[in-house]
Length: 276
Length: 319
Image (cartoon, rainbow over all chains, first blue to last red; front, side, top):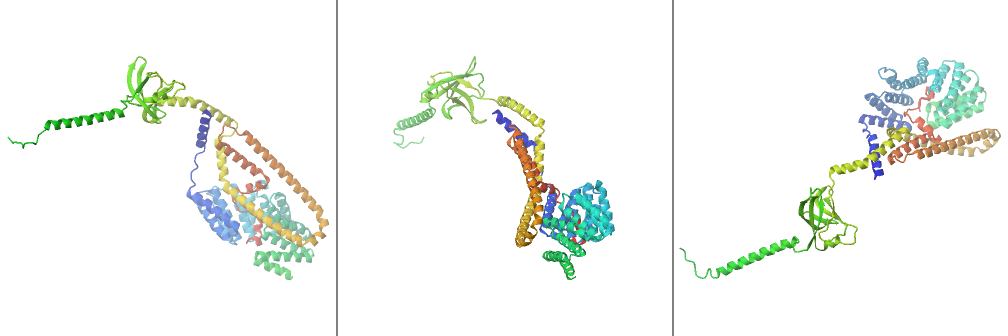
């Protein structure tokens, strides 16, 4: 009897200790739904649909004054807009964070936004703007020891490479590879940039090994865009090294990947290279 | 004066007498029936008890044995020890009341319902004698019920207090545990997404493996030519793979030991839900540390798309 009473009272106390959670407010549940749908569409390759739902999520998060959700969804929106080739829209999405001093975004979100902006500017060859934004991001990453250190160094290396500072680019790419030991994607990017930097310095034979390592990693990661980029760089390096047979092999493989991706622009480039 | 017709009131006295006789017989029959129904013609045996307080007892109150009416309260007399209550037990029911039987004041439907005298049969082999004095158990008032509950509950509350003290000392506050559980439940959609991602990646890896296997079979000749060069590298990879498997096995063993320790430390006083909460929390924590799932949990935090420096490469913009 006493034990039963103890059990009953403990049960009652436990029930009291865990108050019934309040039901999710409508706007919050709509925000979560929009985020989930956007992520699902992005995974499925429907980037236009994903952009629509990320836009909805940014609006709902703004209505809720949820700074972290605003930043996360705006950054995701900028990514899918860039994938769609809508660079102005991608820039506008990041402006929700970078041009909004009143909202208290965390340092991490600001760093992410500045890094994304630098990537975006570099992708459209705005090298000066990219250098400014990557500098801003670097200041938030103390001693380059933050989680995005490898990405920062890779972007900085690409900025230097595009600015014809190939030696600096090689040094930065090596530093990026050092910090990307647990991040195969950035490791492959660092090796690819390293190969490009060596080739730009007239060392095509030294460029082939890191490019082959990058290709191996990218095949493991399963991103055809990166595989195509590696094969293109390898064909150029092999050509410059005088190994025409290997260069042709890389080009044919690149052409097959490009056709499989239905990437008209890359296919045309590869065919032009093959006709040489 | 009106003259009555001859013969109309002939034998009037006889008719009146017959009417009166029939009425008398009917009244008597009615009274007899009522008396029969009241058990006046049955032999009734008196027994009695003395109670210090006769509140709630009334004359005519039914006396029941196993819920069956066997008599009624016949009389109540004030005596020196309290009130002497006489019960009349009908017919042969007296022999069903063994010695040692006692009466108690009860209600037919628990706390509410009609008051009755309930006879609780005793253990004796012989029946009660007529006029026997039996024990009486008065009804318990609400105050007595509360007092009784308090007497039983106080030790229980003391044990509860001790149990809560032990839980607090062990650093396992129930609220924290439940909050932790709720947090883990909140993370379940993210976990679900991570698991789906893991499955998708596994599927992709399987497809890749199939593709690579086919390619390998097609290119056996080429592989044979480069075998001599590849064997040392393969050996190194195998060694590192075995090391990884060893490490994973060690980690899984450690996780198992932690789970075992957790189960051992579960306190028996905690109820099932609290135990379930803690165990679920431990299992989730342990699962997060297990090699195949650790990366998925790490990456499922904020649902961000990758920030990839490759996107800075002009040709890599469109997917």
